[in-house]
Length: 306
Image (cartoon, rainbow, N blue to C red; front, side):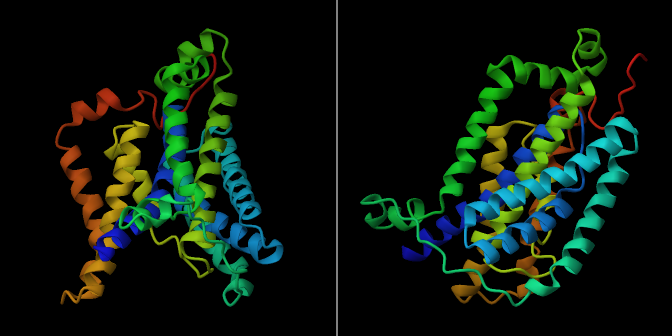
């Protein structure tokens, strides 16, 4: 039973990384911008967060540094695609490649660095409940924070005027512009907010989930987060469920190895990516259903006055 509690707990932690990044990408895409640079942003944020914690000893400052790094890179991406109308896919890929290379170079001095001892976060009394305690009540506050962020994003998008404006920019930027809204600034704000959440996910990876720095440690989670937005048909609640599903698949490989299941480790490492491909193939069987849920202007440039 303890093994299953540990599997569930690790699933929540692994899913938190995907949930934060995917929710950030969702904000971008609701505004009509697709950012393929999540992997690069997360890597740079992971380095920024880790380096900040090494020098200050504060995990929360590390989170802020990661969010700042993600927002800065997203702002550069936003200026290129929103004002200069560069191709969004190509620019995002360039950002991902840049982030991977820059983080590897800048992080050379931190490969052997060690963080201060981490603080254990146990909810009093609840953490001592057999099975449920280790599974649910011994997590870092950001694990619960990801759930709160998803709930707040649902409220923002579907219950506030600002959320309605954001969605209208993604559906019909020309109409929003005709009504007097600054489409470019709204899109830039959405892109930077999404980058900040991707940065928070990256900082969580290097400071809490795996408290160290190694080159490429995000390990494709940015791409899985990108796939999650389609898997969830651009709904925050479904993104949260999908993140835990993929997080569970990721952690299942370690659980199987620990229980002595004789399967090649390479095959087990493939599980999260195979699951991603299978889900995308199943969803793509009905293109009309995707078009009905996808923001209409997703990936398309906006020309004021056209």
